[in-house]
Length: 303
Image (cartoon, rainbow, N blue to C red; front, top):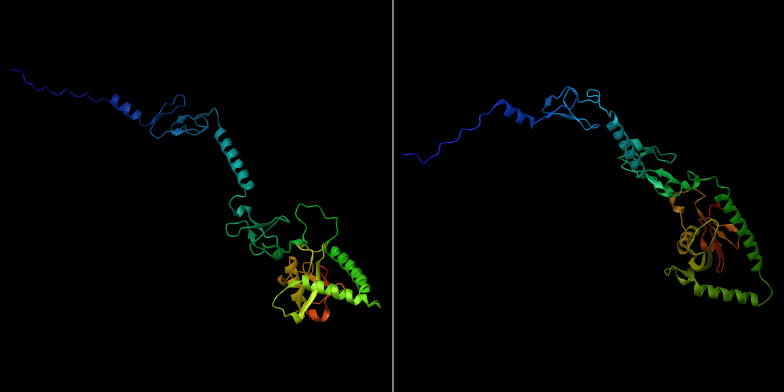
């Protein structure tokens, strides 16, 4: 009787030829002529894209037909990347560091520890301490890349404006001199009443202590949103306090309390008296109702 069970098939004998096929699947043969060595960790040439063994991995070792191409491409990519980073600003590094443009500051900016702040008006870079315009006083400097100015300077504009105001003051003095006509005093009273009706000021100032003035901002030396107006001030205020209030009313930039030079300071010119008022003088002692004062910048101290 034959047995129902089948005998197991003999397994295929493992030979060295079969093992070589498995090993070839792991590594790769060197593509250099006359070598063809099997290397388990082959090297790839980035220039010709060939695969080589340890002995022929360099471009010189396998006599690469495209030698130097990969290095040239890498240098080109690095140069392009550097140009792009410099044009877009990039992250501050020691390589892009420069010194603050303030004459007395030695701080290095555009570094990882200190970022530079550019002044768009005068094309200069400053540290965080001198980033504000009034801190680095760049108005006295010539913008980088700008042509030398052939027009009048701030001081010349201020002197010319002061001369015109003094002439205006003399004309106004002659116009307000007492005259024998009875209508002169009446007309001045009518003008004063009209000034009191239209004037604005601090409501906390008592009526009996108010002094009503015409206030103007000189156009050649100052920039204001309101060229002139009618306001009242306290007779007990100093001229400096009255100047601050007038600058706020006309929306004129006031840098007097920030320690700048005379070219940045505002001054008060009294038209009827034809002179600059001192900051410490009292408004009620140097001004009368109906007088005109003008705000000027850069005219120097009162003489």
